[in-house]
Image (tube, rainbow, N blue to C red; front, side, top):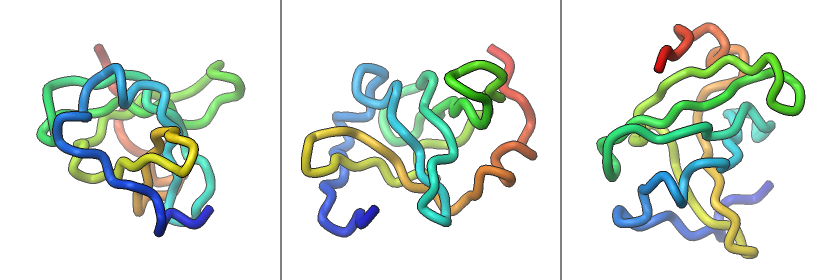
Length: 98
C-alpha cells in the first residue's frame, strides 16, 4: 500500500475512538496487528497492539508508544498506522498486562 498520499492524524485525533481498531502495517508493509486499546492521551500515550492470532483469537497484546507509530487516514478515511517493526519483532516484545 502506498502511504505517501495518506493524511497524518492531528494531535487532537489521538483518542481511543479514533485509534482503536486501526490496522498496523509493518516494515515490509504487511499487516502486523490491530490497535486493541489506547492508554494516556495524545501523542504521549501508549497503544496496545494485538499481534498474530487468527480473527482475534490467540493474538498477543503488546504495548508501544504512540510516537513510535505513524497514524494516518487513507483516501477512504480509514485510520491505520505504519511502524518500522516486523510482526516477529512485535511478537518478541513482552506481553501487555492490563
